[in-house]
Length: 107
Image (cartoon, rainbow, N blue to C red; front, side, top):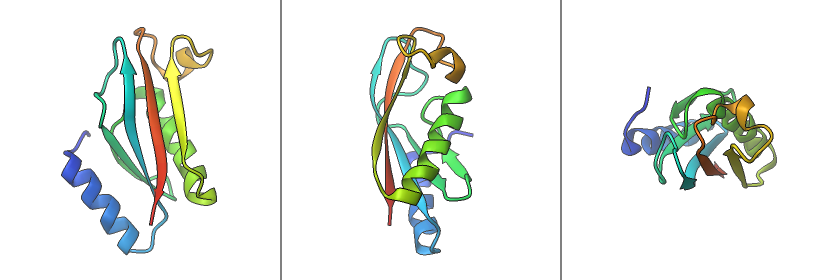
């Protein structure tokens, strides 16, 4: 389910206040056919619970997995997915698009 940005950011704030480890993933760049526009968000907690969308399909799973690592080590990172990437077909961007997603820990 794709929620509004205010729902997603509000949930990030709520989860952080509850003491959960939280990461926020944001689409920062797109090229070609991309499922979600720049600025789309996905909030993830340390247990892998998430709300929002940065792409769909297997990309979301890859972002959730990386977000859990970001929560653990505190190091933000930029992830890239696209057909030029050898893993693109595995993560579901066979449509010809490419995206960059920035993942950061929220405290």
